Amino acid sequence: MAMSKADTQDAGQHYLVCNTEGCQSNCQFYCNACHQEMCEECRDEHLKNPDNRRHEVVPYRQRRHQLPKEKCKQHPTKYIDMHCDDCNIPLCSQCSTMSDHLRHKLVDLETIYSENCAECQGKIRQIYQYFIPTSEELRQETNANITEIKKIMDDIRTSVKAEGERLKKLVEKVILQKIVGVNDVENSITAMLQDQGKTYEDYISYLKNVVKEFSGYLSSTQLLGNPMISTISGQLTIKSIPQTTKPFPPVFTPGQFSEVDVSKLLGTVNASTYKQENRAIKPMETLKPTDQMKQDEKKSDVKQTLSLSSFVTKVKEYRMTGVKRPYHVSLGKSGSVWVSDDDGNLVHTDLQGNALQKIKTSSDFTGYHTVTQDMDLIYADRKKHVINRITMDNKVTEFIKTGDWEPLCIHSSKINGDILVGMIKDKVAKVLRYNKTGREIQNIQRDNKEQELYRNPRYITENINGDICTSDFGITGVVVVNKSGHHRFSYSGQQSGFSPWGICTDVVGHIIVCDGRLKNRTVDILDQDGQFLHFIHREPSFLFPCSVCMDDENNLHMGQYPTNKVTVFKYLQ
Image 1 (tube, rainbow, N blue to C red):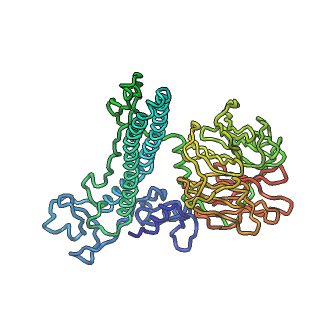
Image 2 (cartoon, rainbow, N blue to C red):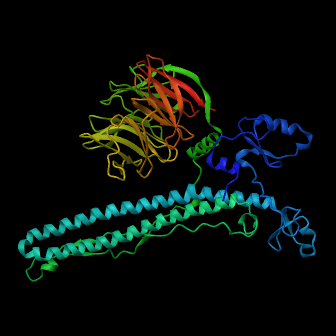
Image 3 (cartoon, rainbow, N blue to C red):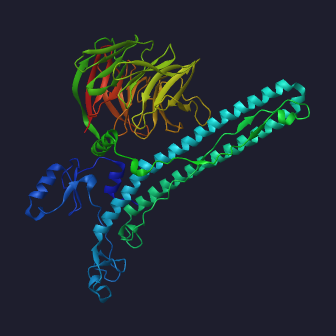
């Protein structure tokens, strides 16, 4: 079903224009009586009219949905605008005067429609904010169980083989039978867990279909048969999250050594006899709005009305003491800034340039530090193959060890707090995802054709849709994969010799990347699908942009080589 223009704009959060004739200002308000989008100035003029003083003008996101216009089949000159509760059918005003509906309870149809639309939108929000995230957590838990069971079964296999070595040739004949038994148990448990994972995948797919169905109700121009005009409760329902059980690993029991009882000596592998325990599904009512959720909602309201400005405004400029060149910038709490250069200097200052903390690292001109949701700083020490955390009280602790891999760039997700790390070893590169506790949960290295995605990932960020965007020096391009790690697109610039440096995304989903080639010196802006929109900034001949990040006011902070200056620009309106 086609969505109305207003619904399409609201769902996609595009730039909204005032609907007053001749006005092209940004829409912020909505008159429920006139069903008209308005800017602030037109709203004031609208309410000055004595005829409009009783009109209800609300913020656009709080608007009442307009009832689709449909002619009454019995009275073609009249529109359906009432609802008979006794008969549970929509009517026109002339139908309501007929004998069939005398003394029946009649209700304004637009009120019912608006209330049901609000309920439908609420259900959609519940799906996105509770049902899908909770189901995804359960799916990830089943995957973790698979890994755990695999490790346990590996331990059992080792025990069985150790027993076989002690019994030498006498045991060799029996040990194969035991291994088969172990494999059968593992396959059974793994199959069960995979079925559970498939159950949640199917359920998530069902939830997305429910979203489409409910969205269809919102945009439908048909009244008959549309749940949006029904007063009967329970029309908009969502199936409960499927219940699954946690597996209990089997236990290996050693046997007694004897030629006659070889089978017993090798032990047995038995499935757990414990009663299977249901997985814990957090109830919806325990989800209380956190400060972060309120801030995200506020950002979403801002995002709805933001778009690219036709001009870029310089807001301010500040110098960073203690660094030679601002190759990477991370914004901390209360306007503080973390900046690093190519000499391993990592400096924490305020916007007046006063140094708060300085750390010496072995990293160079890469995006090797980021600020977490908890406002801690985490940074990669390339030569030591470790990622450290600096807490608010300035304590430095070891957070993640990367083994033989050199961590180059890092980003803390604003969506869920995950840590994205680009790393390299022996000219092979990859991106790993860690959860908040530092446990590896995703490895991204090849595309669906088994081709290497990365060669030298130097800067990394995440877009509002979960895409992972990486500036790669080796590929000399921007590589974008979705949150599942599947390659979406690559960007190789608008000018020859594109050299991607600092990269970030904004609240609208734009991708902003520095082109540091000496002949180019631009900051490119792309949409979420990699389409070039325009240049935000072109540097003078003696400077080039090398780092970018966004603040909470939707301003762009840009570091400039070879100075120690960071310039702040506004490019959204």
